[in-house]
Image (cartoon, rainbow, N blue to C red; front, side, top):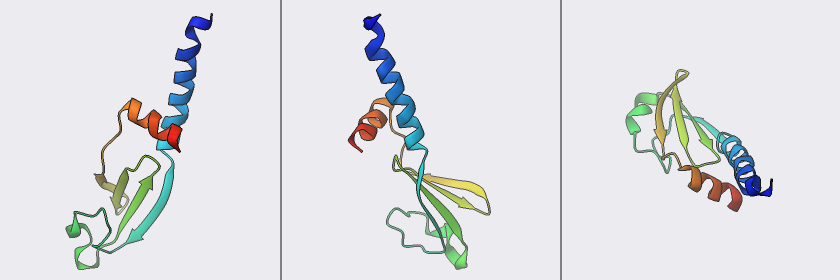
Length: 88
């Protein structure tokens, strides 16, 4: 049975990493066009408000009027996600 121990452990870590990645670490509701990651100043032009949700894996999801309008960053591969999770 020990031949599967590594696979079982990797799956256990993967499941924890996926849960970790989807955990919000910050929420910003603002009308600023100067956020360090923001390359879409039109979203907040003319005092329009957005809500940016930052996640543990570095992705930032931008919502306006409750609708997802943009995702900043890129999704990690499974290996990158596990590596980042284990580093944290």
